[in-house]
Image: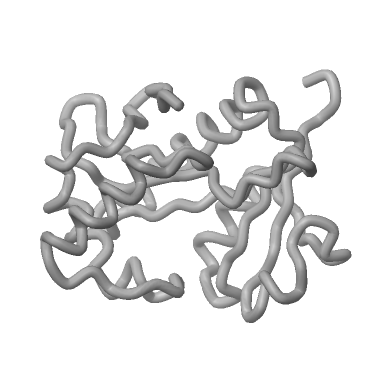
Length: 174
């Protein structure tokens, strides 16, 4: 599956390359980024390269690196993964290096990815899981019309664990 390049006013969302390893290491080893994520911390360039290879080999997900139009350096990522074909749903995930947070970058990126998910990939629902303590992520989801999946219709209680599940349904005819 060829990952499409998505562009916004300020950003390019593109496939990762092995040359992104230093930035992947910087993002995935940063305690501020990892604070709300349940994953092992990257500790070496080899960890970053292994992660990139895993992403590039994945067939059932969409994973974009985020860079600014005027600078190809990776500053974050956004993905659609945990795809459930029968439910026509996918989970959105995202991370952004802290120096770039609070500037509307992730808002711009997820707007493009949500549009792609509904208009091109054929999803009817996009889910998200967030730590209940991650106020910035919850605010971002709510600003994009995600609502809590209180009935566990798309996100099971087991999946949610200590997280808050959110859903965004495609508006019919949109």
